[in-house]
Image (cartoon, rainbow, N blue to C red; front, side, top):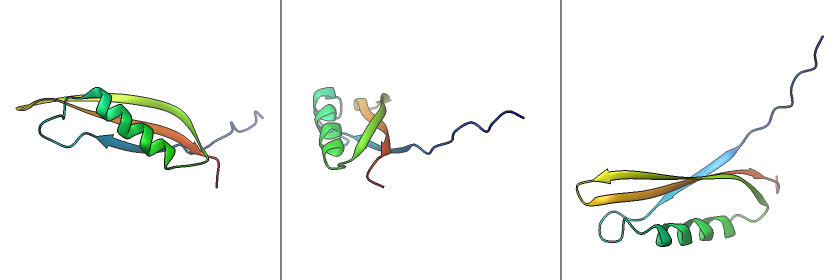
Length: 72
């Protein structure tokens, strides 16, 4: 009988620029994401995905960071 594949849980958090002026700033979003990562010591990043929503005020960027929490 084949062995069970190893399983694990991935965690995530999402961040976006505030709605309104500056919501389209990718550099500002990346700074927010970097701050979010730095405030979570002991995590190992698995992936970062950028999302763009087109609103009446223009592009609105957000990001989701997928990570393993090695501190647990």
